[in-house]
Amino acid sequence: MPDLYPAIEPYDHGMLDVGDGNLIYWESCGDPAGKPALVLHGGPGSGCTPWLRRLFDPGAYRVVLFDQRGCGRSRPHAAAATTDLRFNTTQHLVQDIEVLRRRLDVERWLVVGGSWGSVLGLAYAEAHPDRVTEMVLFGVTSGRRIEVDWLFRGGIARFFPEQWARLVSALPAGRREANVVESYAALLNGPDLEVRRRAAFEWCLFESATPHWPPHEGLDDRFRDPDHALAFARIVTHFVRHDLFLEDEVLLRNADALSKIPGVLINGRFDFQSPIANAWELHQTWPASQLVIVDEAGHAADARVGAEVVRATDRFRGETGYRS
Image (cartoon, rainbow, N blue to C red; front, side):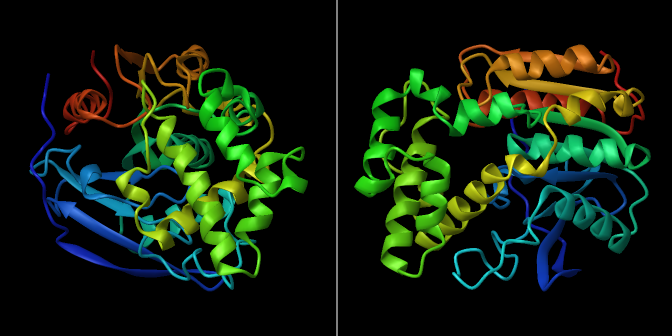
């Protein structure tokens, strides 16, 4: 099984004005003359990490990463109570990708996305299929209501009852019987910074447990920065409250737009955040895709999942189609 490629640094980076008062951070890595590839991080609100750069042969790819609105190095940052999230929607992010593509003078590119990034990748590819050469998606979800409800409205509690109970019990007594997402969103957008940070801590504690099997105890390192945790929790609850700004099942209904785009769908068999049925059902509507099941893996993008992503990007090097 292939290893991840060695760590690399960007050869170019910048801030791009995408409108609505938003500046997004972007970076390019690898070979400036290589095959263009776009990376879409998860969350929404996770931001890019150096790990994502290592999924590509740096001698073959021109890898473009960016922090989506409100997170990472993009500004304004969603940790600030004054940051308006009204202009942070799936449709705005799809537009941002096109603005970035034109800014970097890319005609077409391979799209790689994990978790929420798979939703955004599908939305982008279906809106602009002529701009996508291939796709590699991992921790797959297509943004259906059943998937959103499973993860954020109690379905996953069947496997993580203790962690879900803590998430609910951390709410003020008067909110525990209400919609958990709405209740946390209210706390995360309130005026009291300490209340907002406590709510973010509890939300991210739950988010830390569910990508792993057995469940992870304690807070993932990625949430140690309280501003990152707060921005992440605010953005996630904002999107979930609005059902990811997507009509139910629209990405599956419109999957015929992907008919000429080869794809690889990679999912851990023990992925409780994005159960493997999500990838399976998407695969049934997308004949040009290949489904890769990683035994023993969960939702966390570990070495086993990363190796399969590398295998897929290696196969797409210099190609316009997928050959199994």
